[in-house]
Picture 1 (spheres, rainbow over the protein chains, first blue to last red):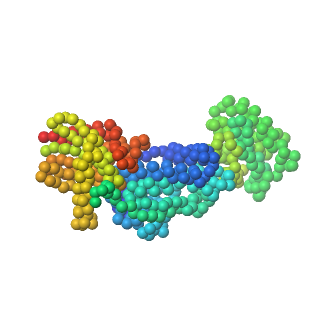
Picture 2 (picture 1 turned 90 degrees about the horizontal axis):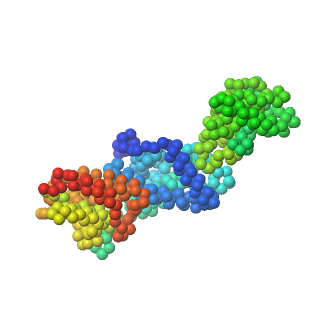
Picture 3 (picture 1 turned 45 degrees about the horizontal axis):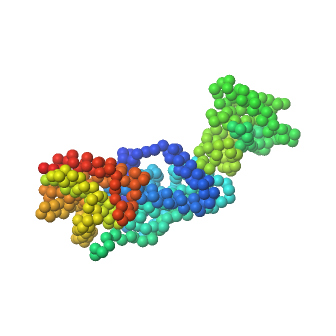
Length: 188
Length: 141
Length: 147
């Protein structure tokens, strides 16, 4: 399974995916976060929330692009979801493959060795950012949005970030519930 | 041998400064400026800015070499394309290694500019920038 | 042989798009019958057919089923969108057309259009005209469209 996922994502990356200059991408995201910080008066909790909301809306869309390009169906288990998110999803949109650790039927963690969003970034030295800002929080939203579209309600959050001086950048995803496929009201 | 390095923004505002000694010839990296010199350093560099502004339009090089001197001390300058000036006060002539030093500082500075939280002409407070400049000084000066 | 109509249902089981081609009157109907019984019955049928096929075997997938006068071609995406094409029963497999409608029309005009919703509320439909004209271009040019 994992072998074929790699072949699939290699092929997608080489032949299907549209690419964009990485510095343009990094700087665009960077100025977005910096502007949010200024607009919200360096209230980092709120910045995190905004980034997550944006990510959520991106996730709702990305998942369709994902299915259109990959032709994959729904995953059978949450473990499989973790593999597909890391090996195909991240590869396709960010060209990185995070390590999947601590995986079971209810949760998994993604450890990002490389984070294209955060290249060149140094957090502001105001004594708060290192404790409060999750710079790449948009990813949290993307995962929530995308997984919700496949009927998985999850809770996602960063637990560490190298930008804050941690050793790793780790994003945890916890399964809240598998949503039921909806049926129209009154048609039982 | 001792060095005084300063980066000057486009409004003649200092954005970074560092006093450092050499590690070559069994130096330990601490600057050995005489006390009266220590206080004068910023002024010598600042007065050299006028000369930089004159020289920078006379050729298309970024590295302007030694442009001024003051009682045995020399001032070398480098102007980035964005018109930020790197000034180095030094007491021995070492044109080539200073050139290397400036070029690599420029690389560091560009990376700093790419950080979304750093604004142009703002003083650089980043600890990692400071550390990297010191490493470069150790390597080249 | 002929292609009659296209229906798209979202994951909340609402009909978000319908397109009916009428060869005789040359009229084009877009999003006219979304709330009508036809749409609801069609959804109900697909829903049941899907469950039956899955009950028969776990890996089973509903692709099409036919009646005396109609054939229903069906595709469901991982995100729960259901595409359903009604044609003459003589027609060959139309999966390629449903794939194309999803990957080029839906993804390009709905998903990549940042101002269009992607998670539809009840009663919301895909109103984009370029979407309809792209679908028409795909469908009408097929040899099997009208004979």
